Amino acid sequence: MRDHETIIPNGMEPVYEKIHYAPAVRVGRTIYVSGQIGRDENMRMVEGSEAQIVQAFENVRKVLDAAGATMADIVDLTTFHTDMRELALFIQVKDRYIIKDFPAWTAIGVASLGGAPGVVIEIKAVAALGE
Image 1: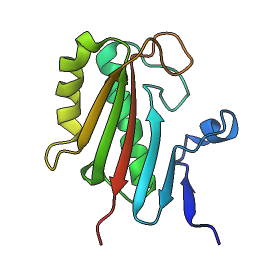
Image 2: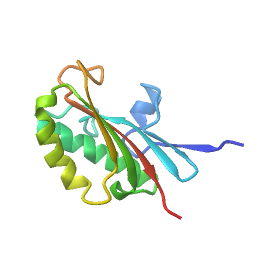
Image 3: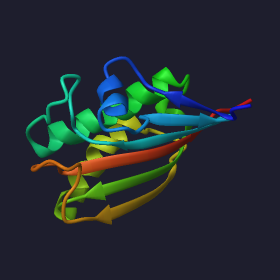
């Protein structure tokens, strides 16, 4: 008996089929969202730091929606940043998506992300569904 479910929202099939990872996996009432970058539905990176951060959050929201969850269900957030000087900008965008019941959060500075040039952010999340 399989105790977990792979979550693949519409439009994210290429990451599962070509890159071989699940956008999310649900185990019981917990959803583990893979790192999301600022890639649009055509698998192209959007340009500009704020636009990438917004797109990454939209991708997280899309994955959670496909799993039957919302941004309010996030209990743990891990973010990877190629330029920690943009943390204030990230927080401004984050606060548009997570407005209360703030999750645990870890921000990590890294040299590069996403296997493509120009990626500025990756957002990984864990969500817990209530009863």
